[in-house]
Length: 233
Image (tube, rainbow, N blue to C red):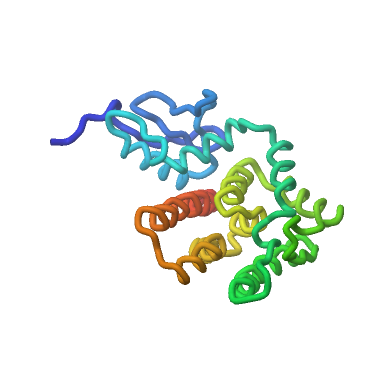
């Protein structure tokens, strides 16, 4: 027997400045009560599909696209605070903190170098990894270049970049993923490098590592899909 939903229909309509999602005849709103209006029909349809799966109660963890759109519209933290926080974590970015010489450091160089080259080409700065426990020493020009790049993002891109940076423990990887310079699988490979190295040495712990892998896949794939749908008009 089908489980009854708390609404009858969900559909997408065109709005003056984008596309809106409707539950029955009510306009869907964000937690801060802003109308849920997104730039592309593709993204609106994807969010509507998430709502199709909400039955007797709302399960937020099953709606990552809705969550990202709401964050972009509500901006719970001021834009300047988001950028400042990301800059604060840049010196200890996982791509700039290299293990002591050995197999792991070699693998880090292999996977991190393409992202660092992307940063150099896109922002005109050279970022050198370090094995210091204090993190990388960054100059004002390097910090300014990263800040300018982040400030150049629109509200949708910044919401995705913030989530990617937090999930991957890397501002640089989050920025490269936001620019769609890497595939989802490439982002995951870089983000999971150290843990995968440990699994290769000591084995996978069921109920631990496998859950972490699945969780990270969602937290990376969702903002990457979000960004793709923003470009699909």
